Image (cartoon, rainbow, N blue to C red):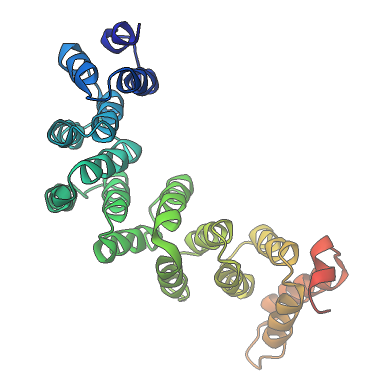
Length: 273
């Protein structure tokens, strides 16, 4: 049955993975799995990735690495396919990491999508410096869409850890950084657990005169909802007391201060008032 599933052209990557697991359990030598791989005629990036993982787990190192190479040469492979293929190849043969790092480093980076794909692939291979540089370039690019930036940050922050989080916060904490990108980065940092770094960016956005009033309220809500009411009040009062604050900015800041002072959130009980 597993052989039939594996050979079926309609079998997707998930089905291939399940069938491969059954084949390996039935024959620990991996001979049945290897034969199934040889008999299958139709492949795509997902099915090749699943096969590479199964071959690596079965101890068929040469075949696992060869299948992973095919994933990297597939223009339809996404970041999920590439990460899994690289990990399976390295699991099968740790010496292959240099080859896969070279392939990832040679990936195109002309469009936002290509940069994101290259960054997350390098990140998965632990090539952190160039990967982080690519992520930062996207975070500072005013032309990138918010949804696309959120997606790459979700992937990158889950792999990049505190070092990437700190670099993102530092890079976006400048007046010339696109405000909406700062908003997206702050939200992404908060979602990844770096709330202190996120709140710093939110506070900067709260005081930015370039941010539309509706977005200023969104930023303030983020701060209030995460227990940063006191910090928001402090920043707003400091800005209002600045000698160079203009009439329009004064009115906006006073409105935000009133909202921050009067609004109540459950998180307030955990923060100083």
